[in-house]
Length: 259
Image 1 (cartoon, rainbow, N blue to C red):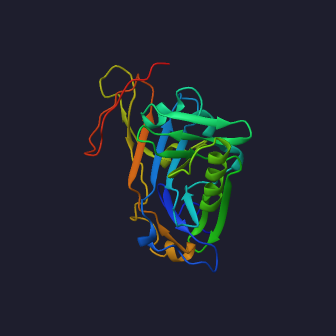
Image 2: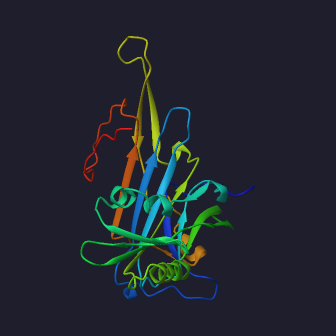
């Protein structure tokens, strides 16, 4: 019998090391990473896509940060978003701050100077590494962020733009053709109002590093450790003609975006 394709539910983010290398000491991490998720639903007949942004301290001690998603990943369906961030109003749209950015035609990516003077390097992910593992848990698919490559990219960006060393590094990319069952559950309610219209309630269930349902041996098998994030941010973009009801105590707010 072949192993199951989906041995877990939701998104898993682990720090991993190559065979023979040891994991970084957790105490060596001065600032925990941040992760940002944007789910975009553009219409009934289109599949959603997921934007993932990862913020790392420049001294991040991990060798790799891996993002595991429970479906087969196609490298051709992963798009780097660094150029969009550094375009007109991109920085303010992502970070909700008006910061100055600098780019160089000789080096991809850019340097963003915050209002407090600290520097953030936006690193391109032009050639994403997609890893497939055949394990006793099933087939695992991940997007690998190699920290050394990000750090080298940050240094190149700072040199090309004549900036000082960056305190943080940021990479953001888009995963296309996201299956809807990854983050939501639908309940058909039938003709609730007697007018011949069918009603459907969708429950958003987006999970990040939720251990429940994850095999307890996954860290040992992957030679990894679940990442402890200082911030997890989730935005869901839906059509404004849908009724949205919130019951999560962690929910902060919503806004209408004009197109």
